[in-house]
Amino acid sequence: MEFVINSSPVVVFIWKNEPNWPVEFVSDNILQFGYTANELISGQILYSDIIHPDDLEYVRSSFRTKPEETDKGFTVDYRIVTKFGEVRWVSERTLIRRDEAGVAISLQGIILDITERKKAEEALRLDEFRLEALLKLNKMAGASLQEITDFAREEAVKLTKSKQGYLAFMSPDESALIMHSWSRDAMEECKIGDKPLVYPLETTGLWGEAVRQRMPIITNDYQASNPFKKGYPEGHVELKRHMNVPIFDGDRIVIVAGVGNKEENYDESDIRQLTLLMQGMWTHIQHKLAADELKQYSQELTKINKELSEANEELKSLDKMKDEFISNVSHELKTPLVSIIGYSELIYEGTLGNVRDQQKNALETILRNSKRLRRLVDSLLHMSLTQAEAIEYVFEPVQIAEIIDDAITDMIPLINEKNLTIKKDVPDNLSDIRGDEHKLTDLFTHLIDNAVKFTPSGEITLETYEEEDSLHIKVSDTGIGIAKDLIPHLFQKFYQVDSSIRRKYGGTGLGLYICKNIVEAHNGEIWGESEENVGTTVHARLPK
Image (tube, rainbow, N blue to C red; front, side):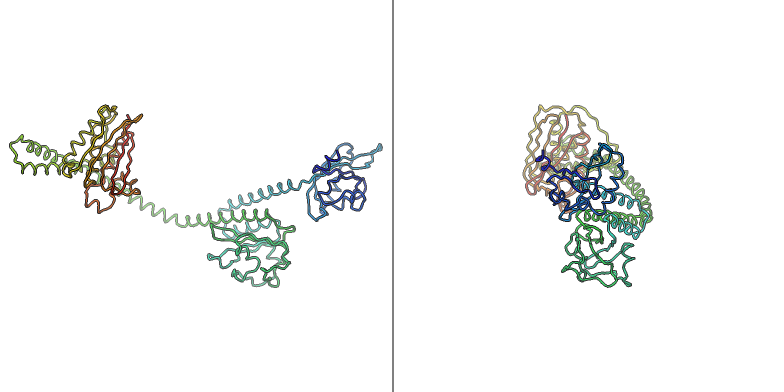
């Protein structure tokens, strides 16, 4: 049992019920506090000698308030001073033993070191205090900058149990500390008449080390010799302990907050609490400055917004007029084009009489360019209807192979004109899909047209294969290709890689935009792959 007791953190005591509690017995593990059992049992040291002086009367009063207790125990927490001068918290649990007459003859109990628990409780209390301070800061919406910093500085003094505190802002180039304010107690104690406000960092003493070292600095013996100290002027507050912390905004120090003359040593907990409080203050200041700036420009922004709204309405009206104009012009152009193409085909086929070879060549040019103009008009009309949300689709079962054949047939004159080879890998037994036959014909016509346009020589390949729930179509060419970073822009309205390409190859930049609209109307997806000087492949996936 003795081994178990001495191996545990619990120290067992029997005290005499006499003034200052002479020790009758104590377990050997009292050594954890630096004392030997013999020192206490022999009376060389009384128990009251190891109780912290500030807690001695409290412990005595705790015994005095237990007048009638016999077997009942009581618990009291207090501080003791170890033989090494360290202050430790203990929890004492004691039974009062009495004789037959009820007179207390001894006290039997244990003490347990609870210092770590007390530290945790203190840290929690400080966190709650700091959070309350930050909550109050956040409620100071209408406060001035001076009121905000004064409040945070005084809360910092209380939070760290200090006597004095100060705040200094850092110059933008971090070359000087600009003193903002001192705590009330510091102002009362300081006898310096004309206090400087700007302190160049190169001439600043110990309190500038937080900036130079870019870290918090604790000095728990300010009177001790220190190579960084440069002394302070007559009338300055006498410092015993000092701590200051730099507050960062990104990589730049913006504030230095300092406190001084705490009764106990400053430690890492003080650094943490002061830093978090001041960081919260700086964030609040930034929000306030931003809010003030926003408020300052709110009327101007409202005015600008009104002007923009009016201009936007005017632009909408102009845009509508433009769409109507494009639509009307497209219809007006399409009507004569139908006649031109129709009669040209009749003449070309000899229906209206024999045609010489030279005349046929001229008619081929007329037909080819008329059909190109028709595609341009159809593109403009499609864009106009899309923007007006007036385009209609008729969905029915269709064979994709037949639609691709029709699109190739329509584009054969342009393909032959450039002596391109067209390859087709489109099985005849593909599953039907639900689609709009005319719109899908436009889709593949535009895809082939785009491939032909940007392929000076080489071949164009069309491939189609079935996937689980869709048909996957690829239109590939061996043309000029484009850079990979430009591929995401391919399907934007009026997009051209650059003006020189538009001049060289022509086009409006609407073809792939229309393809995207048609594919998305069929609940499909479309995307492109390309490599400069190798070629481009456009993929379309259409659900079955």
